[in-house]
Amino acid sequence: GGLAAVAMLAAASPAFAQDGCDDGEMVIKFSHVVAAQGHPKGEMAAALAERVNKEMDGTACMQVFPNSQLFDDDKVMEALLLGDVQLAAPSLAKFEAYTKKYRIWDFPFLFPNMTAVNTFSNSEEGEKLLHAIEDKGFIGLGYIYNGLKQFSANKPLVKPEDAKGLKFRIQTSDVAEAMIEALGANAQKLAFSEVYGALQTGVVDGQENSWSNIYTQKFFEVQDGITETNHQLLTYLAVTSTEWLDGLEPDVRDQFLSIFKEVSAEYNARAEEINEEAKQKIIDAGGTVRELTPEERQAWVDAMKPVWDQFRDDVGQDVIDAAVAAGN
Ligand code: LMR
Image (cartoon, rainbow, N blue to C red):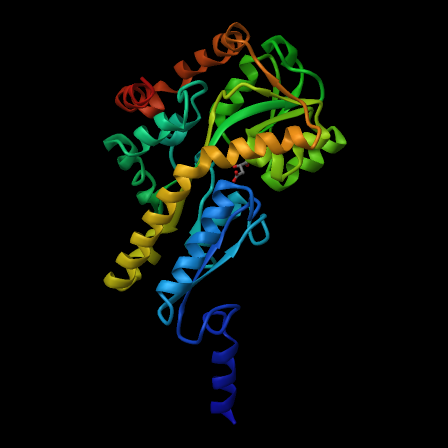
């Protein structure tokens, strides 16, 4: 009868009885685009799910969807607002549609190392930036680190002039676009899941990413080599919809946020090591890694760093000063 049909519908509804989730548990879906293993964000997501599923058992459960299985980084923001997923962690380069303040994270040659990134993330300015997209219905829970980025192409890159005329895949970042154009090269914005194919078929000549992305996506297999420029940061904002976070019972929210904080701190501290391992694995797999002399690297700094001037007003001098100070 009618009641049985209603009961069956309820049992089949996505809010209940999903993989690893028990009836009545709140399902937290975490969608991301990278590999589940050998990657700072992929491993952080898996560790977060493990702790939520253990410590919040009976109340909440987390399901992780890696590798753009569910959404790419463009679509995932809408999916958060629609309640199709509850947690995402796009690169800070991908928030152009929501705020120009996050452009700071893409300033080339701003952060000399991950210690500087950590100092800035935990500074007053860094904390404030977590709230920069609240007017759009989102809240940043915290930062998840990856690492500094390296250039690769289908020919050796040693001098910035070597990049001239080449087409590089970039994230949806206007700072990255300006930076590539400053090299006399062309930039093409592409979703992460399309990069390998674009490199393989020659739709683009090169790309720039962290060691862990270059290794886990096998970009090095379809490139001449990777040049260790450490020119720009790749890091993520763990983001939820404000509506979802505000709708949680206070004790549930506190428990979830405190688990998030611990796991992200643990993996942020390991991000550099994971990237170093990825670099070594590229070399072990026969990939070419080119290191630059300080003079060679300086030529890349001279070519790209002037783009800061185009974005100073978007970011604000106080934020720039804090980020620079974090590296000194
Ligand atoms: C990219 O698009 O290159 C990165 O943002 C992917 C990622 O999540 O690391």
